[in-house]
Image (cartoon, rainbow, N blue to C red; front, top):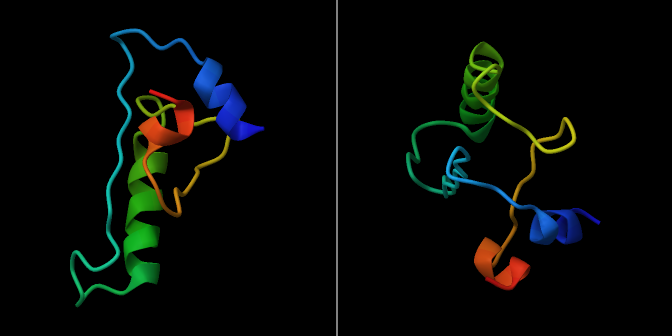
Length: 70
């Protein structure tokens, strides 16, 4: 299970976890356009972006810290 693997991960200072809430950040930008732009940037910078098991994940609700027990 993803949360179990995340909880057991042992990152060091070389790792950065990014999180953003873009539900209504820019109401004039369509969700599809924002997702396409994000995907293009991730592909463009794939050498600098680590993904989990070749997948991007969306957090639906709650805090990652709460989910991992931190």
